[in-house]
Image (tube, rainbow, N blue to C red; front, side):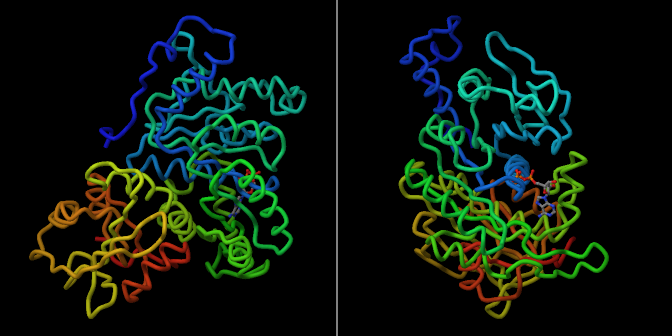
Amino acid sequence: MSDNMKTCDHAAGCGGHNHEQNEQNEQEKLRCCLDRIQHKIIVMSGKGGVGKSTVAVNLAVALSMAGKRVGLLDVDIHGPSIPVMLNLTGEQLAMAGEKMQPVSIGTLKVMSIGFLLRDSDEAVIWRGPMKMGVIRQFLTDVEWGDLDYLVIDLPPGTGDESLSICQTVENADGAIVVTTPQEVSAADVRKSVDFCLKLDLPVLGIVENMSGFVCPKCGEVTEIFNSGAGQAIADKFGLRLLGKIPLDPLVCAAGDSGKPLIYHYSKTAVAKAFETVIAPILALSEAVNSQPNNNKENKNMKIAIPLADGKLCMHFGHCEQFALIDVNVDTQRVTASELVTPPPHEPGLLPKWLGEKGVTQIIAGGMGERAQQLFASQHINVVTGAPAEEPEKLVADFLSGTLVTGENACDH
Ligand code: ADP
């Protein structure tokens, strides 16, 4: 997939031996680094403690699991929690020439203010210019290399630090605003949206976190805050609700023990909720990749849904037909749809067949792990646990972030 990545055409500025002080060279250096990152996603929240870092970590890990080259930049100066959430506390930063090497977990590259602190209280005594310098350095003086995604975990709120970071990261794809479902959160979301508007930064959508409580004993979900407030907030500001993540003790335990939920507990309902949130972000690169001429202006996604009797078929490999639905990612509109009959069942055949048809996303009831891996190798993203509904409804729910997914119905 790297053929559509931009390569740096300012190589001299990137690995240069001198640290020119003048602003023009610094700008050039910054542009050079940012040019090598295809998608920049900013995760923000109106206040702290709402799950912003949790969303950033799980998003970065999920994108990495989907085969993307991902960087995770933690610039939450007031509480850099990402080293803990990824079990990276105490990691030492290595230098490669004049550049800092991010800490790697598999293919995921991580950089956090936390790696520079001797103890967690140190951040609060940093003065403004010092913080700003570090933020800029984290973009220009870190060896990120070519990335499909850089996920940036912003400090909470819409203060000077957040402003400075967003102004530094030119051409970001947009911001994900994390909030909690109470009505009072509307004020925080409004501040975040105003902030993005001022900066011409698109809002990719809202994540309603801590939405309902999942009982660890019976799995029942209790709405302890206002149900539907996230959707109401999204409607009020004309935004997209990317999804709702329940309040689940497992999320907290996973974060505290440094085991990203989306990887270590991928079969749980709460991981499925994260998948729904993440799918549209993953679609940003799938849409670009699916273009034969890599035309970024015309982003399309082709969604495949296995059918039996006109509704989603739970047994993926034995469906009667596939609905293939083309969607323009920017307008969220269906641009074409057709029904196709798959070739006779044969293990491993469908990923190649659907790949050749240009499919970038599958909505399935159930699918075995091996098949999911085969689809990932074709750069096709899979959502499992979808209900037996008509394809048009599933696509509409998927695009609006309201697709409710349950257990993977067929795990062989
Ligand atoms: P922020 O970055 O907004 O300050 P964090 O992501 O650090 O918030 O989350 C704050 C705390 O809440 C962490 O202990 C985290 O594990 C916990 N948490 C976040 N989301 C959930 C959730 N959906 N269920 C349970 N605990 C959560």
